[in-house]
Image (cartoon, rainbow, N blue to C red; front, top):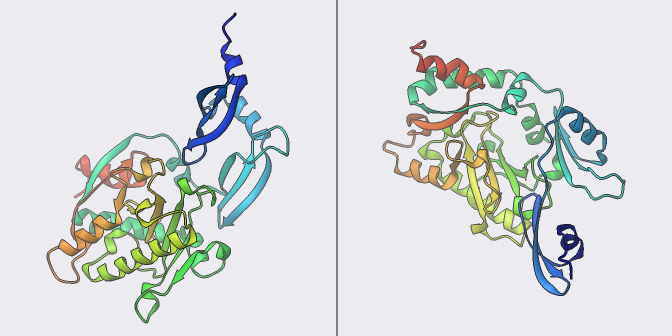
Amino acid sequence: MEAPTAADLVRHFRVDKLLNQDQGGRRVNLLGTINGSPALLTAERAAFPSNIDTLEAFHAAITSIDNLGENDIYRWYLASSGVTKEAPADLKINLIYPCTDKHIKKYSPQTVRMVTETPTIYQQHVRPYMQRMRDEGRLNWVFNIIEGRKEQEDILLRDPGQGSSREEAFLLTPDLNWDKKTLASLHLLVLVERRDFWSLRDLKKSHVDWIKHMRERILDATIELYPELEKDMLKLYIHYQPTYYHFHIHVIHVMCEATSTQAVGKAFGLENIISQLEAMAGGPEASMADVSLTYCLGDASDLWRNIFLPLKEGRKG
């Protein structure tokens, strides 16, 4: 009897059970049978083509575009790459329009550098840079959410904080990169309402109780919203440098596949920051602005080109 071909084996595979899938459903492990014998099949979506003609054809084939939301210049959709309108949605599309030169740099390949930002470098160079970025109006989409103009149907929690003023208020909402369905890739965002907190550098010892309150409220709300989850299945972290200068916390499933945004040199665990603040010498005004932070930067970024590269070459005092 002639041995079956590879195509025959795949064609005769009968699916019994989904064993596992990655965070975006790009890779699945299926348990099944071939001719009555147990078999395990792993399927993974191929990489996107790099040829511009093929990419144009791929774009032209996108159908069934479903709007998930929009805010300022940011829009996100679910769509299908199938040839029929009945094909299930298999694409998560983010659209930035109109995009800026900074967006183009962020999403282009670049060499990564490790830098150490001392308190002096922060105060003399990085803090003024943050101010310039905020003055350019790059936070309109954040303020749209906080002030109730956009994405209100997506807000999962509004918490007034422990104080009587709005200084401790915060809200919880899905991150725009999450499809709002796949729990293994859960990604939520915590935005504080106060506007004088730009990054983790603004955290002080006096804020520890507030941060702990936020952490507990975030965890409680998330497992209440998604009962399949437990607290120890969630990871909370803060980016430094962040993409935008309004203090926010990321909440993700611990099984969410680690990307460069979760790597050492970019993501700082919230619990570790709390411990660092509690152990910090000094009174309640001691802060994260008083320590050196080491993190990574792309060499096309303004921070590298205008601050850290000149410092490395001795062109800045």
